[in-house]
Image 1 (cartoon, rainbow, N blue to C red):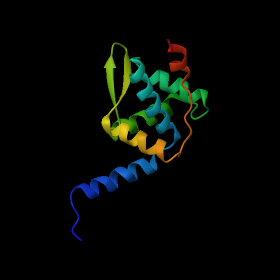
Image 2: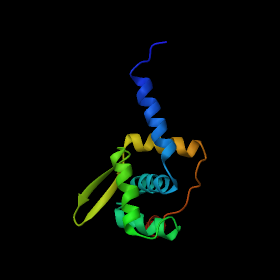
Image 3: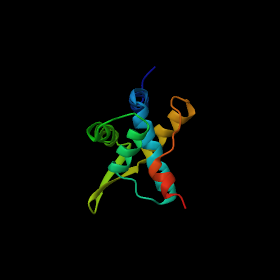
Image 4: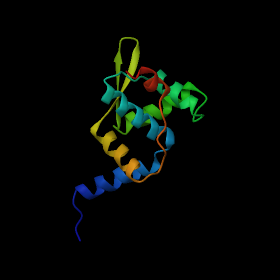
Amino acid sequence: MARTLEQPGKELFNDQIAKLQEGHFLVLLWAARAEDRKVKYNITNGFDDLKSHAITRTKQNAVAVIEALAALCFVQLRGEGNRRNIYITPYGARALETLVLNNRYHQRQSSFLEGSAT
């Protein structure tokens, strides 16, 4: 059976999702929630939230998680003022949906977003 161009892309996408770890999942989740609430979520917020859940102890590791998501085109980083804000892309939304449906990781609350709740 001949392969179409969509199949290799789908395989790659599934392979990328399979390699995501809990920190990646949580950043995607929190970025999506922030956009729903019309709140800007930045790298520092991501670090603080990951640290509060004992996923990382250093900002370097948090930045690496976020930069990996950006390299996969799952998030977009935009410099706005003196902050680099995180925005989920359509690919990131599909990845997040897949991870949620697979129940691979548990959802956790963002201290930043819960503190920003209106």
